[in-house]
Length: 415
Image 1: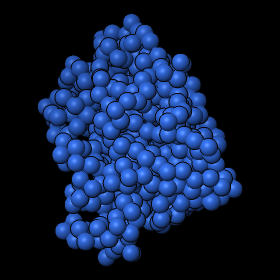
Image 2: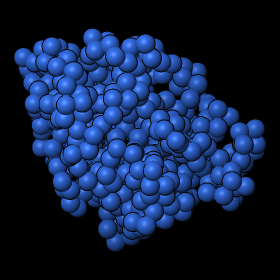
Image 3: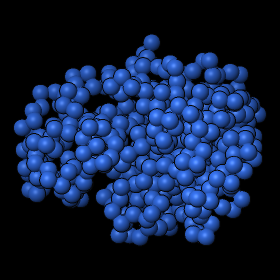
Image 4: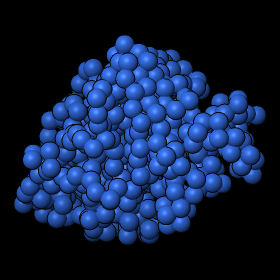
């Protein structure tokens, strides 16, 4: 990324207007790569193998690609734009965050911008060779203590990015019913004695391509090794509760990175961040597992729109996602009640005037034709999507809070 091509926030207005006008409300986004120092990249998100450590080996391998993000990645040693999506137009780059600040009504809609003053969600691919440490994301009340926001999230496992399982295709979620807080406390007390045994208190579920999960804040989970599409709230708070993963030590600092400084050794406070009832739920899968549901009203001859993330968290519609499949030679008009971030996962075609092409390999810093931000303006007016290739054109798109008047509930795939 060439610094001279990046526009400062006070210079975004004019080029943003031109980009939206020429793109009919669509913005071309460039790939946003994020490394994690404590994980091992799974090598399925199309980044060139020579670029896995483009931020430096000390920063860790790149195992995530973030979509339509105005949220900064909370990594130590981060570059200033880490986690932020850039829009590209006429050889210039500007952050989606600056664009929304400049023209929020047009990009995300008056109601959302008035309430949040930003695009309050993001999504990503995370792709690892093995499991992530058993961890949780703070709820809104606990995150507020460090000046941040809570992080509910969701999973969908796109078949196109999961040609192999990698090393551990299972995810531990929650705690075994009957587990006590004293059991968890002993695990924290044993942090430096080797494996602290937190997984002995949990239950693993085998991951299945083309399905997903809702993960409320405060719920422990250790994501497995399927490449995962993850719509979530716009925050990067977390606390690791597992001390050793695949022989790798997890430092205490990753347990308390989003805990007030005076509570870093307060085990009772650390455990209080867990939503206990949700963790020991005897019907955890029934309340959190989701499978795609066809939206018949949004589907037609040659195209199918499916809900892949739906339901509410504590009664709130915080985010949702859909998967659109357009058959070869077909086209449709996509009309949604709100803005969305789009990523193409298969095929080629066009969305409005912008080309769509699923890359086979991406160099770090290279621009692609697979990612688009669909503004509120474009979504509500309708955008034509056409498959110009010989295989299905498949795109995933995620939405912000309270966009849909009605969406499926968890468990509706059984009906």
